[in-house]
Image 1 (cartoon, one colour):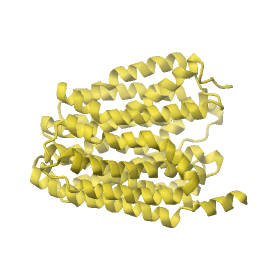
Image 2: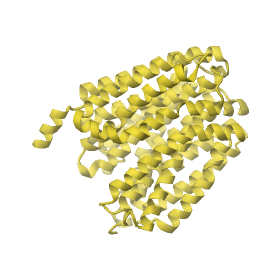
Image 3: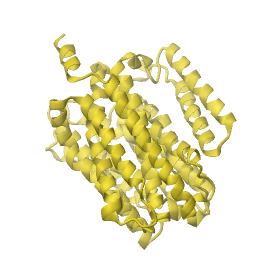
Image 4: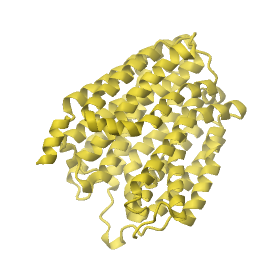
Length: 463
């Protein structure tokens, strides 16, 4: 395939399709956080149940995103993209129709499977379809509009909950996914995938061990049981052994011998864990303790995403002058200051003085961090491994988010119906914010110690 020009009708439709698909997955994440308290009250859910509403989705997405990318390469991007999109629609309908919390959690687990097929294929379709000269601009459009979807997610979620119900947080996916399927079927060209006789053996064992490992540890952290933790740790240890010895590993472990790559992924794990835990706790604190409506709680977090949307492109230019290490150290430190300000939110929480400054500081810090972090991951590996590098970093970010949301409530002493008791939840919230600030500071220290500076990169390039 020679490629499709972005300025052509087909090129515009291809980018719209990929962007809409990515937006749906991002929208789902931000919208569901706002809906947690209404879901809990309507379905008589415990705090552990609400953790599973978030983590059931993230578990299968984190565990299978590398599998989804591999299947797209092997069986054809459009085929896997369409299967993932259709699956996301069906599971969204199941979420919205759930009459009990267990049904909702099961549907969210399956929704994560669909997202693992959909997410890696959306950007890969642009990479495979658009001409090389137009590709950077197409990816820029994809990134910008994906960011906008994150920004409007809390607002849309709060509005849907107030005028309809939490179920429409999931039902809204149906017309969007239908539109994606129709456009993709008409305009996205078929990709043949790898011929059957040229395909290497698919790493089924590795994929299963990764999912069992993450699932066992997540279950243990949420439910407080030790046996699943042992199963999970054993599965993860076995995963490392299998990936080391198999001829065609899902995760080539050699990439972790690159110091910058390993350090950036450890930093990703702790900082994205802090980000997800903060969003989980903050929207509950604002509704349970401060008396905000779902719409108001959703609006409270919008400045964070707006900052990322407006200034992330400029951070790339700033990085050219300062280097990645400085921004990856200073960004988490600034975000930690914002988290510590947010830790003071209580029953009386005027937005302009007690919420907005913390959200802005946190958003500014994360904005400074994300672009250089992504650039460092991609620049650390040889050109033929950028795909696996991106997939690994995506999986690490999801795993950090998954485990942080699973572990922190228990660490700060929250369980059962505590999310519905303002005094109890508020005490746990404050302690959780201190943990999040600590994770961010740890991420900054890792960057300062192990990410190469500008001089090291320049010298490496000169050699």
